[in-house]
Amino acid sequence: MGYRNRIEIMSQILDAVNDHGNGIGVTRKTLMYEVFLSSAQLREYLTALTVHGFLAFNSEKRRYDITSKGLRYLELCNKLYYTMKEEQGQH
Image (cartoon, rainbow, N blue to C red; front, side, top):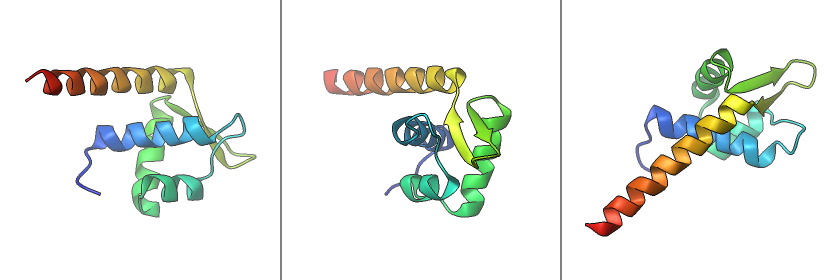
């Protein structure tokens, strides 16, 4: 796996929560293995995503869920990614 910037990592975390949450949320351990981050790195990103309202943490279940703001962010990142891919293909 090559170098990933912060935006790519945040998108991968949101994508993993969206794909694996199934309405019950995702644990830190699942995210750590899914996104290939250390515990310390993941904690940093989860804190940022939660503080900014992209993820919600259920302290009873100890699981993360994506919020509507997180879904919107993920949608915009995916649109940008595919637009850039199309641009690269045209040149």
